[in-house]
Image (cartoon, rainbow, N blue to C red; front, side, top):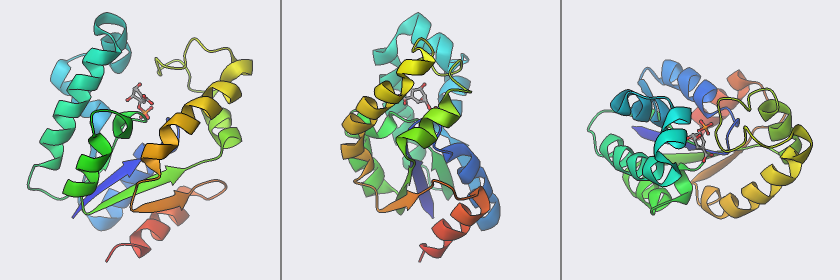
Length: 171
Ligand code: S3P
């Protein structure tokens, strides 16, 4: 079974993905990690050194590689992955399930304010401007996220409950 998790930065894709993979006894892949391993560089340094367009091209290429491999897996994507190069349609076509982990703007602000540094797209945004930035960004990205097969409302739920909820939706 091929399962893909999409959602905004800080929505818990990696945490939930790891727990779900453990529960289903299948492997876990993180697209950001695949990119870092193959390019032997951190996401921040790739953005700084080669720019976002280079990153998006590699993200698209490696996403296709992962989706066309034969093994079963849970794949955690980057927050922007579904929004470029037809990636969301490819995921819907090649994976068995795409889940959108949805969190409210205040919920995202609360999490991201603590982890801005590793994220090139928000690290230079003042804390006070984060709600507006995230709100606008999410408004643009929602069109892509909402195409997922299932939308999982994540506010105020613990990871274990979310994993059970997702597991319950699998055939
Ligand atoms: C990005 C999200 C990041 C990473 C890159 C770009 C985005 O992944 O792919 O910094 O465009 O939202 P996470 O969602 O895992 O933070």
